[in-house]
Image (cartoon, rainbow, N blue to C red):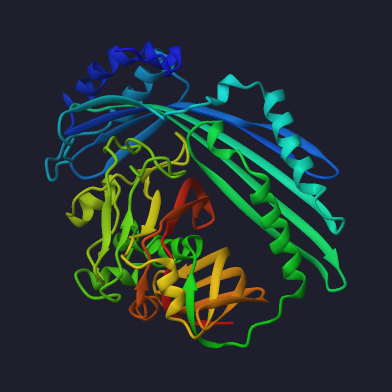
Length: 464
């Protein structure tokens, strides 16, 4: 089976890894090995400067051993076989099996997976990528004399990994690309800005941007020069897919990463199989969603990617797991054991979190709103897993009157509330769907690529 996407340094070791795992398990109940190599490129073009940055690459091996009570790991930089063997000896030398618990190695599975790309990123030189970003910048910055700055930010990240335990022999190459555009305009009320972002697991082909997209970005930015402050209060609200996804990410994101259950830091743990929203609420976590920026084929602990339904028709069914939290809590594994890189431990982490589609058209949702606010673009979000409070800040909101957008803008607009109250208010879910690319940290660290999204939804919410 061809493995051409793996670095030679990893490919040479692949035939030896089964014996390495068997050696660990000759003394202990469970062993595993992960080989991981990651690299990336970032390009930024704006009015006064340009930057091309090769992101610091990481390459190394994670050795895992379980003694029946505690999970032990050791990281080894690079892929030198003698150093890996030495790492195994140092990891297992003082360990003895105590036989209290077992780790399920999962079913027999093997496979080699590669992100499909129409225009592979390696088919373009760094200079060609820079020139394409410069061309987008020229098309954006000259659209109106009030534009004081335009930013084009391009990111590519390549992840190549190989996982082996007694039942798994898995390899993957994940290619992520993202294009972020920002425009700032100046007028009598100061400077206003707006942005757009596209990205996913794919090649360069998904980040082409049309003149119509650029013009809509500039037009909305100019309109924000007349934006007002919103009067705080309860509103009928329609959220666009990006805002819908942020509500999912913040309400059923970190708070249902089940290592938080183990630490007793998540209120959601008390609500398993209880109602947390209206019958229209279906929330999924899915690292297998094709093309999503947060997707992958298997997690860093060798579990094949598949969807997990977190909320089913308003009932909270359970969270997402890594090996440790699933073992401690005695619950099934989901494919969410993720590491920032080989030097970090695996945590239960989100990948692509989204609100499931409904049956209504977007037009039908708007027709139900006599007076309300349309929230199309989020700018930040935060949650309190222990209190289950949520706050999402949107760049702007637009007034809805008699089912139509009026053009009257408010900026910024914040949504706040208690998660079950917000989700209980969901009265309409559209049949469209989209996801936004992003990056998520756990606390102030452990950054991983993610995505969130869903359809337009109709809710009642407190805005301010």
